[in-house]
Length: 505
Image (cartoon, rainbow, N blue to C red; front, side, top):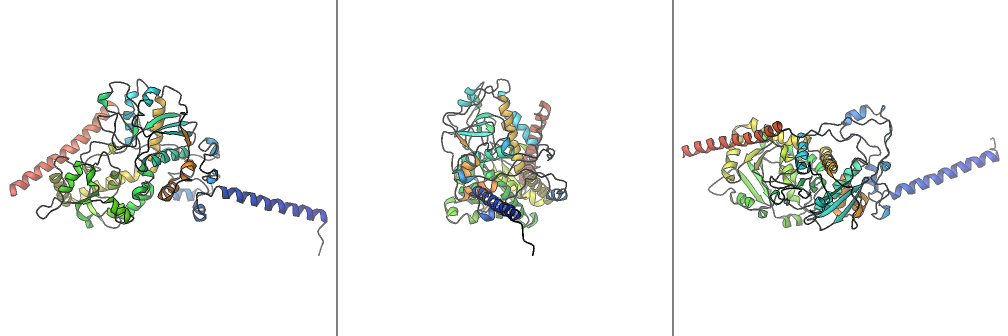
């Protein structure tokens, strides 16, 4: 056997020592980023980013031709919930210049309402005074500067509304790092819009919230439940939508109960109590099955009887407002059932894109029972048309309300709002920097799970969808008239139905 020279042996030994030391330090470095996830969940994290809008089949076909994408940073919980430097800047997400972005899709038509919501400030712009004058009812003030978020809290929102609203905004910053412009806004997490038009003839305050009506100036923003509602164990929208799709497959529309279904808390609004009082009785059957939800009892049971995906068992599902607008509308629309929409007063960011007879069946608020009875009887004798309405409503939330578009709506709304600011935002004295680490690393229970599940792993390879222009007067009038005509058509059918019923008595 040939003996290795002393010099060569020393070189090899030095190499292996350096290699071993390097592995040790790399392992220690990776461990510091795994504080949020256990070993199993960390192994499931994708190591490379892929386009949010590219089908998996196309990604698989183009693997050989795809340049090496960026490294995705994992949450760094070793800092005890403090925000790392450059957490949302473009420097934190360095993209290979050779990676081509997916061409942006066109935004759904309901994005046009962004222009309408911001229309009151088109001439004056938005001053610091307009923003600050909304702090009386706001839960928090949000300032974004150079891609970082700073929050001043005025009062705690109900349950986790403010928490998951802010979490969603932080994920937007991770999805589009360096693209969200500087801004300064007030946010109200309550059920009702409060900036009434009658109180402001000019220069109204700017206040973001979850809903508005025709008499208010509130700026509508996606609600917290898209990232989960831990208090009642409602999953984040992306995961829940998959469950609802699976629930739809358990029974065909014709195999479902031929009645209208509603389940919820009736004691938050008179209109819901009125619906409960019109439930089926020994003498009358209005075609509705109404169930009062006892949340305290359901909480003790672990919400086992409140699984939304298991409630797609009736041909018709009723949507009715509570204190104000209700987050339940998207869950009801996703069921493939015909959504019976009791005439609403309020609307959120996407419901203005819904059309009567196409996505839902309109129900009178002042004559619910007769209106529901007619809708159920009509649908049970017009299976094809009823199924088409149910399917179109479900397709709307599946294709036009997916999380890609929720984030893009937020992006475009904040971008258009920022353009109207007449001043340079600065960090308020009492504000604190907020980042995903500051929230998720310190969270517990379902809050932590939902944050982990909805964490944006890295920047989107696609740009935000292409924003549609504002309605011109003719097209705006056409939309309003189309809705009006659809509702009037149903009222005509309903009047004829009850005239024929009265003749038979």
